[in-house]
Image (tube, rainbow, N blue to C red; front, side, top):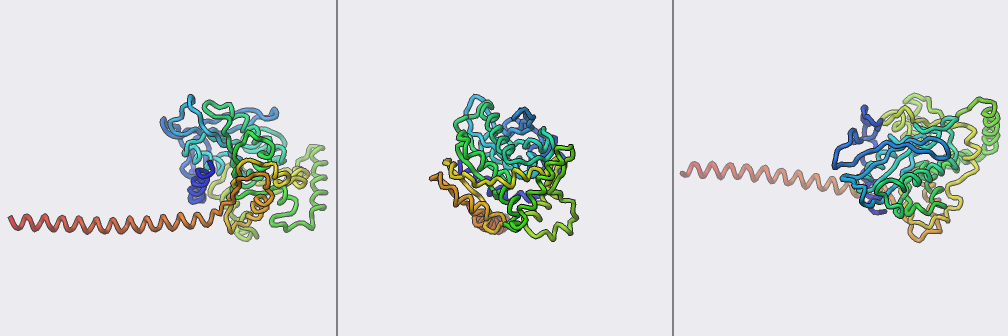
Amino acid sequence: MKSKIIVVLLIMNMVISASAQNQNQYGLVYRDAISENVVGKVTIHPVSYEVGGIGVVANVYTPANYDSSKEYVAIVVAHPNGGVKEQVAGLYAQRLAELGYITIAADARYQGASGGEPRNTDRPANRIEDIHGMVDFISQYPGVDASRIGALGICGGGGYTLGAAQGDKRIKAVATLSMFNSGRVRRNGFQDSQINTIQQRLTQAAEARNEEAKGKVLYTGEMNISDEEAAKLPFALYRDGYEYYFKTHAHPNSTFRYTMSSLLDLMTWDATDHIDLIDQPLLLIAGSDADTKYMSDEAFEKATGTKDKEMYDLKHELISVQIKLENAEKAMDKLKEENKELQMKIVQLETEIKNNK
């Protein structure tokens, strides 16, 4: 499973920044998204179910020539913080289905098209339970081999996937991409830049909880800024996030905001707490120059419970693939030139034969 996941992630990271499609009946905004179900190809199936009495909206992707009488490996895909199933989580789910897996990407409760109030509540326990819920649902899906279910978490979904896999041994393999430890960042600030204000922000979160009890929901994380202001953001993570979520792949259900009271839970949680309980194969994928890599590094170091773990350097492999593609293109250009010269020689010979008759 791990080798195939690596291949598809490499492919997708080469196209992930491409422009989104404007019209799609499923609301998908990523490149080459399914626009209609065609017999014999990968198909998408909008589904709904409940987790903890709250409605969840998800998309299941089935591989080409799907046959419910056969058995397939399934992969649950957890979306980034603020993301929705129609964005990058759907992209990965579709590409994995193209490799033969049955996949599911769901909107977290309180977010996207799923139910739950107050909107945009972002509590680790909820997000982890959402992943358990995806496993619940997909394990009963026709054709899924419930003994072979993997989990892929992207960015914030990666941190929550680590949390889910610690106890949920139905998850047989775990992968994260650019894992974002929401607890550490909300507590310490990005790259531990706000450690000196932890107590102050906890107090603000407690006050927000008071206001929420009175019926007034306070939010944080809004990104109502101009392109010029976005370009000046101090971290590449936020600059790239603005470009993706607000420009090239915007979706009306996607937002960076979350309830301020959520910080009471976020700041007292950490994706690496008890990570040693993960004894499943573990694959952490991160760019060597990414400003989020320190979180994957920490998780890799603390994941002592598994004998099968790997840190995958995405940049190195992308460069290698790019070089191979460039070499292949050069080889193709050379073949075209040789073919052109050969065609000219054939014409020349045919002309000489005609003249000699």
